[in-house]
Length: 568
Image 1 (tube, rainbow, N blue to C red):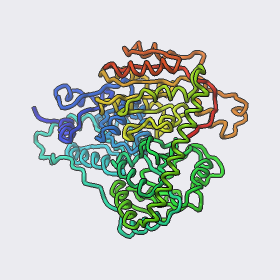
Image 2: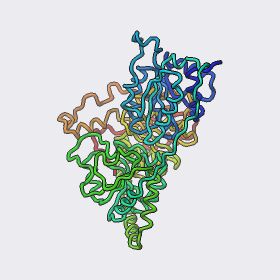
Image 3: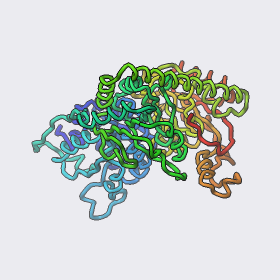
Image 4: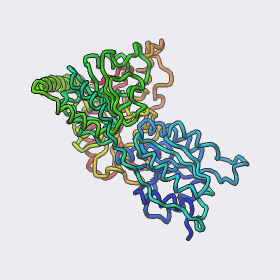
């Protein structure tokens, strides 16, 4: 049987090690789905709508570090997926997103479902292309995959016309060379490293801002060693971009997360004279608050990033380091150690002692507040999170899409010991959390995976529950159910909107009627329960870990609106 364009596409992906194709098919994707019926190199993972399809691929790719491959149905399917594509773009997730395009012989007639997709996808991808010759398909696939996986990583998009997918390649001589990803670990320049080491060595009260890309570039251990050498706390990204942890939350130098608003960030950072920044965008904020100077003017910034565009983008830097995250951190650590005197070691020891005391006191304060709220029903967000945290095993994977409830509580209590096992929302397009939970569980089948989701967020991708049951993905889904879009109420109050300040809101309460998530999950074949107390919540989570199927746990929590986010 002569190979077709879609056969070549699959051959290249299989040779690269791709195992899964996440999709929702339509008429323009039928050549792919037909080919997959006779190709046992792949598992096709079906989602009932494009939001969970994209989010599952996103979670799989982030957890595994591998290319995620998505197949969507032409223009409407791409349209449905755009919110999740935006999330992946903000995260820098290496996805190959494909969609079938109408047969080119129909183009002039303006066929149903067909239309411009490349320009639609381009703003939220590293590269977007329509492949109009089967001869170009191998080169297009190689280029797309290399661009997706080369830092700064991110999604790419390919539009594949039906006739290109079906065209025979029997008479063509095509270059089917395998996909090769170049080694991108480039060190910063020697001159910049020397300047950065001088600034850091002279710091009296340094801090570190560590972001998601530390984890994604396998630099966690290097950052721990650097922080201990410098004697500086590692502060995580703001809640608005709090995607992956750069540092173990039970470490004495974990400095908790930044608050989400510029004035609060300014206050938090004002005690430091030098701040080393790596693995994060400085900053991507959410709501304008005045004064809007997030970085105090007296602070000297040393910023390491693989993308020159991020350095000095929003704030002037004392030293910019362009290069690989892990190698750059290791070189800074070695340079600092070579210069440290006996007094330097003593100063570092004093700073570590002081930060250890602050870290422990923060945990004590939070536990005291939990005890004050214990016994309240519905559960307060703090007691809800503590009931989850107390039963989490050390190798747990946590996905969060309930920002006003989770509130970095698991980190502030030191429950998240493995930075690689944490996934928070960076794009803030709702519907992300359920799919990412399932994708992470597919990537790490031997680890327990817990998704902590808001009752509003889960409804954007509720069809993912069906996929979890169909493919027996044994993730635990815990819903923090306050029957409202509380983040919008917080923002409305922060913006000083007159009715919000009176407690009046339109379109932000999910009541009259309230929907029953347990019935929805049960109707899709999933085990589901509703619990109300902290002990029952802990028990249900333990039960979910003991079974080999997915489980949803719905928990009512306090409906008090507009409480300010607290990041320690």
